[in-house]
Image 1 (cartoon, rainbow, N blue to C red):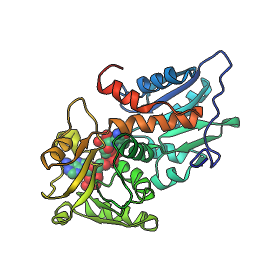
Image 2: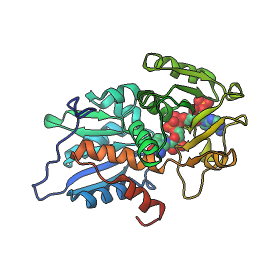
Image 3: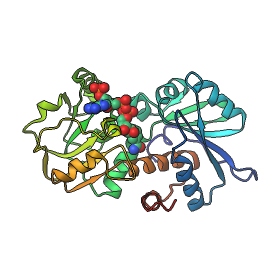
Image 4: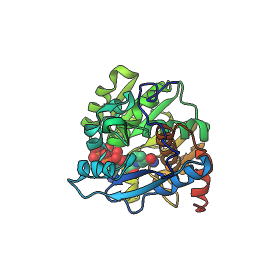
Length: 292
Ligand code: NAP
């Protein structure tokens, strides 16, 4: 076994108590989170007896909310915006990939209330790209747009898959340079501004900016996509995002939004908590068909 479970992280499903195990996602805002539906579907698929809630945590209340959840008997948590860095600080044991990401999206309680933290976002992206979409990463030139928390969480996993280079292009160039410096020892990584990309073809372009939230695409030069290149937007929506539409217009072999990453990172959390791997592609298909 490799990964955080091999590092001694992960909680054994208790089961057999007659009371469902309690999980939740903490964030702010949280009302539109798909995580409760995703984990309920995983539980049905795998016959696991659990309840999964969405809890809105007001700013300043994160640590108190975690321990209140524990006092209610909770055993595991997902953490989303804006609390992933606070979760990192709160965790008493952290996986290597959480250390790389500088952020935690999965928490679990062990005996004596010891809290472990992991980050499954990068694994979720890699699994969606390689297993669900059939995108090869080994030896490929990857362009990563953005240098925020989401970008940071996926650089290590992309390099770990053997990408030939990960080029970080960000609006604020110094932020991208700092990130590249952080990952210098993990593989070939560079940073630049959007205008510096002219004339450089890539095999995969991952959008980790929040520009899509405003329906915008970063100002990218034409001709960025090598033959057969893919575009992947970490943001997801009911309709094709602005970046997915950009990729299609540029002739990408495939362009997808981040719904698959969302479900795959959840599946990785579920595996850490329960020790069983759910069928993520079935849940992705159900969400896309609005049947969940
Ligand atoms: P963040 O930390 O706030 O970083 C935002 C990034 O976007 C920064 O690099 C920022 O550049 C850039 N940016 C914002 N507006 C821009 C614009 N108009 N043009 C160009 N660049 C712009 O946000 P984050 O947490 O990294 O999240 C980024 C995206 O990833 C969000 O859409 C989020 O929903 C998505 N996400 C998806 C998943 C999933 O499971 N699918 C998981 C995590 C995140 P500056 O540095 O110059 O400000």
